[in-house]
Length: 116
Length: 110
Image 1 (tube, rainbow over the protein chains, first blue to last red):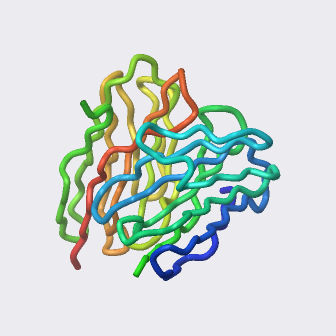
Image 2: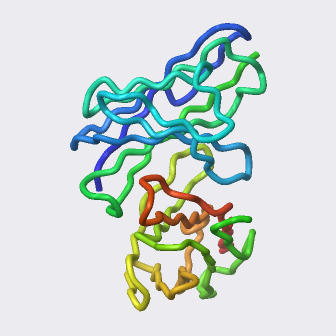
């Protein structure tokens, strides 16, 4: 299957600082990427849909000024957690779709963010 | 109300003991139903996509089936390495994103 690479796999930051997470589709072009958040023993909750060359679409309850998403190219989307607080500690996962809607969606390996 | 409900939440099997995981869904129009495997601390690994009722797909010891209201993931003669959380997700005709269930945590003991 297609490969989606996410970096870093884990990060620890101090309260008030910002953290950037990268999501790359390595062997295909992805016009749309998705960012999810997962709490322990919970399912994946969609945060936003990232579209290349345009503004991201955020789900209800997700602060767009706190979770900045940039999709600058067909192979790269970034999520920046700004002014991070301990409650932002979570597992963040990106996904990219290859091909038409309804075809396989591939996930990155996830980023464990811990804010201290 | 949850669109995707998975059961059971947790399942413990002995090696070789076959079983099925259930995913019930309620959407107005289904574009696709996806099954993923997730290991602790990792992103979901794609297993199958099913598009229409009656469709079946197989991969090694796993077989996924789909009806108009639910999907089953059958595990035949499981091995300890099949231990993981299995996630079901649906995509509606009206949207791009996947809506996930809470998953079934499977433990296969030797």
